[in-house]
Image (cartoon, rainbow, N blue to C red; front, side, top):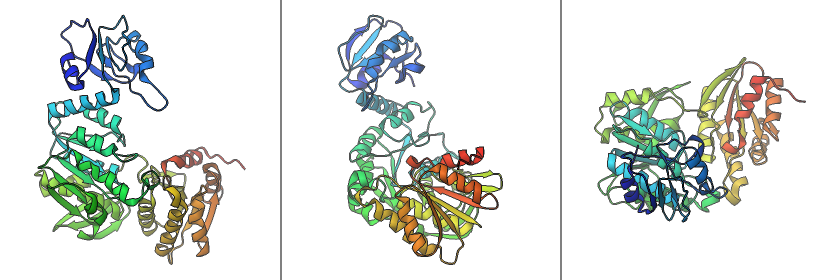
Length: 448
């Protein structure tokens, strides 16, 4: 990913403030002065609490010969200075330029829950046949989009980009620069309802993924009426549902199911992961892959960090699924856990960004758990004020529940009371940092 100055000017519509760069060379894009190299052009990004333009002199002092700016300031030691109206928009335009230049087949993935897992499963499938590149972890905002595209290797055949959102317009912004051939929506649920205000607005925001979808592209989504209501795309649409799959074998770290007359296997539990895999199956077939290739791709998928991550600490087994949570994902993962594991202990923390009805959403999760736990001996631990609403419902129905204010208290309880033979499941929004419980238990910390 290197650009000559003519390409950068063309891609960003920049005004040249200074050009003493006579070498026949190319530039990498850098947004971080701490890792700047002489072959980099510094692109200073701006946020609510930082302004990268304050570090232009640092970039030049560190060896960069060129930089972008939104101002008229010209560093005397710089050889090339390019002025743009907005550096983030310039970054997006450079990424779009590179995406068009390399012209891989592009997949955009979004959804209220399961989008990172689905992106990883799609990658696992497509990689069986194609040279494939993907969004790293969950770097799914506009900056992560640019980093993903610009780190794409020259021989990339399929590019998979995950799209998150903080509000209306964000996915549209990414999609119109990405220009996907395939657009995937895993689902539309209640995650971020506090930001968007309603379930309809969430669906509208997710359906923005079609804003840049090519006219001859393919839209693949969970079969939900709210998605069908808000999607604006006249091309081919494929809808999938867990009801279309026949799951006939469920066990720890394994699921076997039938979909459209073919048998597939996953080395992970959870009906919701079967549903996530259906998007990958549909995409695999549309791309021309064989059944055997798709099957091998599903079978080789492994969860990434903090998503059903199994760890044994002493005599206790932990399952860390705490990367994030919303009502839908919490219900689905708890159901899977208590159905498959003996001596289950469920640790639930607060779910964030649920708006004015956040307490009601937590109560509803508690009510759902009560319906699936009948006749099962399950211990529950909650952490946080909102999770107490889950605990209140569970206690009302006679379940074994203990509530705590913070992760340290939960850690102490586990070390004192649950130090043998249990499997402990962790689920909460990322802000709760439940991985601290694992760290504390590993260290054997007990502060009374």
